[in-house]
Length: 544
Image (cartoon, rainbow, N blue to C red):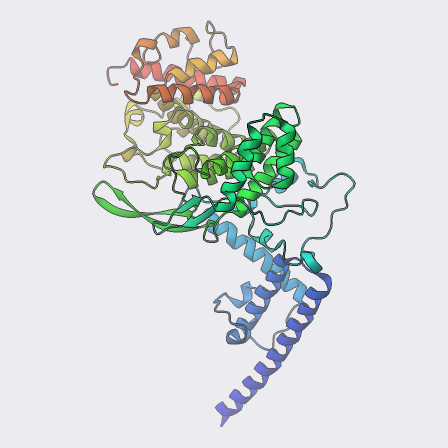
């Protein structure tokens, strides 16, 4: 009898909680209809209600299968007699938890090229850097509230904006869904193909006729009729850039990126990863990779080349506007789509953007752990800091800049490095350095100079350093010219790659042109000179 009475009391409490929950849902639904709350905020409300239902035992009512802890989600306790907080407070907690979960999931991703949607937002990056509210609206235009539902003939015309992550059109843009563009289709190998359409072929024929006239006004007239032709937008953006209209060129490029992104397939998911089966020698394994891999074609008329050119130009335009973090994320997207081929040479830009954005840990993860999605033979070195000169020196810079030591004893740091540390193959290296082990920045820089010695002289020449003097405060008293005339820095002692020596030289020149300024300060030159002296001393030793 006592159990039956307890069960009846419990059912009565559950019915009261159910009615109260449904009243809250109705009230908030009415609020959403009247005030047109943003879709993201509506999701917060729904998340809050699902958590409340789970706490009260009504998961079946909402259709949620969540198993979140009740006290951690919105403040609802499992005890039915507990007083529930205001719905607004529950929404605020739920929103913070959802953002925290996304951030943790991104950080715990097994792929070093994992992508995060907030980092694609250029306006967010501007607010973070310049501490001001920025907008791409025209001057004098009042910014409307987010999430306003357009009624009448425009209702549903902009629903596809919710899937966009590269470019967020403003209400001033009012771009509809593009037509007459190429399309992306999935295939059975977990990749995507970019194919032309009959409408796209017709638009390209008209654009070819206009471009043969070499008249910018004709291209402008063509874009008035076909405003989302990616090929035409690229040409017109370049015309504006060469004319000095850089802001106009960027806005045209934004439209081209928008047209490109609208052509992505529904299964194209940069923020979700999939397991890709690969061969490593004779063994079969799987690697985690974002669901963005694209099958490249050798045909010069392939429409995918226009898409990649658009993304590549947008990446460089973001960097030129002082937004290296956003450019870094776009660069990772291009690499995730194209590796192991890298037709846009994005690996030459990736390390520079990471250093500019101060993403030192991410740069080290990529340089040490990038596992390309392609079959590889046994004992293949895939570490970028061993394969490319820009990553070798950038990894050393990342190790050094991420430390907060102001005046480090260079002699004490160099004394921790032995010949064995310098000559250890990458397969036997520890990814996590120990406290009593060799100094990571000094070891990385010495290894970079050992593998790619030609880059050091180019850095010194670019900075205009006098080779007849030594660096101030360096434990090595030899001048730069004396160090450069000794092994392994002397010209005839350089060990060049038999097949890719020319590519190494070009990548090295590109790195020096943009990253040599990182070594300009007196502190960095002292570190560079001390490591050079220690490397020369080791190479002259009989143990080397």
